[in-house]
Each structure stands twice: as structure tokens, then as C-alpha cells.
Image 1 (cartoon, rainbow, N blue to C red):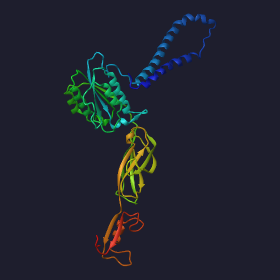
Image 2 (cartoon, rainbow, N blue to C red; image 1 turned 135 degrees about the vertical axis):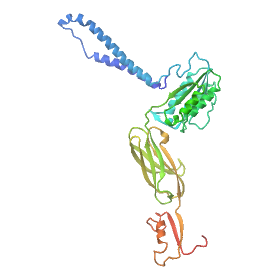
Image 3 (cartoon, one colour; image 1 turned 45 degrees about the horizontal axis):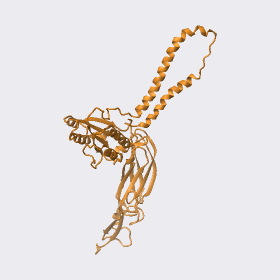
Image 4 (tube, rainbow, N blue to C red; image 1 turned 30 degrees about the vertical axis):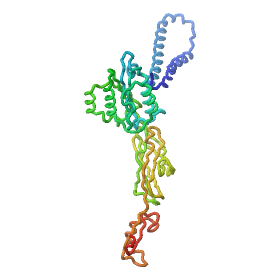
Amino acid sequence: MFLNSLMLRGLAGAMLPLVLHMLSRSRFRSSDWGAMMFLEGIDARQRQSTRLRQAILLAMRMMIVGLLAIALSRPLAPGQWNVGAEQGPVAAVIVLDRSYSMTLEENGRTRFERAREAALQVLRGLKEGDRVGLVLMGDPEPTPFPQPIGDLQAVARFVQDLKPPGSRANLSDALLRGETMLEASEATDRELYVVSDRQALTWQHIDPAFVQRWKGKRPPRLVMIPIGGREVSNVGVEAVSVINAPAITEMPFEVEVRVRNYGNSRHVGVPLSLWLSRRPGEDERLIKRSTLNLEASSSTTLRAPLTVNEKGSWILSARIDSPGMSADNRYDCAIDVVNRLRVLIVSGDEREGSPIGESWYLRNALAPFGGGVGGKGNPADINVSKDFPADL
């Protein structure tokens, strides 16, 4: 069995060294000449040795290409993931990673799709009479198979329909849950399969205290099935915030979007768009389009002006179009927009016919922008009175 059977097509490439060898031979033609008879007995042994070396070298070249194709197809060795035919009934638990990082796309497929395929391969390796349970890392909902059951097809159908929810996983908790499920089983042969990537957050609780706790138990045979490569190329929206809060109707304010490059390669021309709506996905209005250049393992920020004419709660959505993990290509931020403040200044020293009175400095402090007091560019509507109004 192979995790990536498509790579077996590379076995056809093992014929390439043979084809090149035959083509190189066809370019030369032997021609005998008069004194050739005196050399035939001398170099016969040498030619036989040369042909043998060439045959061995050709076989090694073909074998290297074939073995490379088999290695890339990720074969499953009998007895490593699969239960041997001579063993008795086995109780197995599959720990399947459904965390945020499993949405990362590599070579056109997400890590979770590969993890799901690996879990199905493990299920196919079990035989009649074996029992299997399932632990889902990164899933807040409990699994429908809290104890190993004999209906392998039901577990396979459930795994086939799974989708990654995108939350944080805890490997230490999942291992203890799996071990507890197997401890209640009466089977002598117990298998614990962990299908996960190399995300550091998943492994952060595997500390010396956990190791000592694990050794104190009767641990089952543990098989780790790594998913995905070590190098990650991903760009994500890290944060969206309002710079000069609070946001006031009909008054421009700035929003800041921070985008981070988590990989070791430079990304040029990453598309970024800002959308505004009352609710996510409903009547969205495009505010700005831009492109970003990000150096390796760095972040960049974009500031954009925004004006909202209606008060209330709004959703500002920042989106990028970038390969890798699709779950962090969007970031939604709630913005509360309020009306301009109504300010009453009670002053007993207002001069008739003069714009400068006791409240002049205060009025200009509360309404610093152009357009006059109460203008659209000011955050406050100001009213000046000599007396307290009766309906204050």
C-alpha cells in the first residue's frame, strides 16, 4: 500500500537510462581494418570487462530512478502500520489531527486530505475481529466512537466525510485519551496511531512531566504518521484595527491591516482587498484593493482611510489571495461607529456681535477641523447657551 500512489508513475522513468544508453550506442559504428586481426585476441577480455561494468552501471541508474519513485509514493510496510496476519484480535485507536494547520495546502492538496487518506489506509490494514476507536485533535465536539468498535466500515465512512474545523490541537491530551480508550479494552495487542503534522503548537505539551506520566502506564504500540513537509510557505492576515478610535459617522478614520509572511521565501504582489458590511457575507462593499510585497519571515502593514455615514456595528473584512493555509487569508474586525457628540457649553460671558467669547477656546478645541463648529469634519455638535435650558 502507498500513501501517494500517483508517484508510482515515476517507475516508467526507470527506463530513461536504458533509452539514453541505446541512443548513445547508435551513434557509433565499428569498422574493421587490415591490422585488426592482431588486436582481436588482446582486447577481447578487456571488452568483456567493459561491457560488464556498463551493464552494472546501467542497472544501478535504473534502480536509483525506480527506488526514488517508490520512496516518493510513501509505501506502507506490512507490520509497520498494518496488523500482522499472525496476531490475534487487535484494539486500535486512531488520533487524527483536525487542527488549524491541517488546512495548509501543499502540491494542490491540503494536509488534512493526506491525513484522512492515511487514516483510511490504517483502517484497511485491520482485519475482521479487530476493533478501532477514533480521537479527533482540534475538534471541540466529542467523537461518535469513544470506545473501540468492531464496525470498521462505520469508522471509515465517518473519517471519509470529515472536514478540518480549524482549531488548536493538544497532542498530549489526545494521547492520554487514546491510551484510556485502549486500557479499557480486553485485547492483548493494542495499537495507537497518531496522524498529524509537525505543527509546534500541537506538540508544546509533550514535556518531561508528560513523558514520565506516559512511562508510568502500560503504553500501547505507538505509531507516528507525519503529514506534510518541514518547510512551510504561507501568508496570512495577522490583524485589523482602527487607528484613531472612536469611529464617528461622516468623519474619516484610519484602519490598519497587518499581513505576515510565515515562510522562508519572498512574496511579491500579494493581492489585498478591504470589504465593509453589516454582517459577514451580506451586502459587502469593496473599500480598497492593493498589492503587498513581503520579505521572508516578516510582516508589513497597510493603512487606509474609511468613512461611514451610518452609526452602528460594522464588519471590516481584510482578505488576501495567497497559497498555503486558506483559513488565515481572511480577518474580520468589528467596528462600532457612533454619531458625533452633542456638546452643550453654558457660558455667561458671551459677547454680542463678537465671535470671541468665554467659550471660544473650548469650542475650537472640541471642533478642531475645518467647516466651522458643527461641520461634518468635526467630532462634536456644539451648542452655546447663557443659561441652563429647562429641558436639559
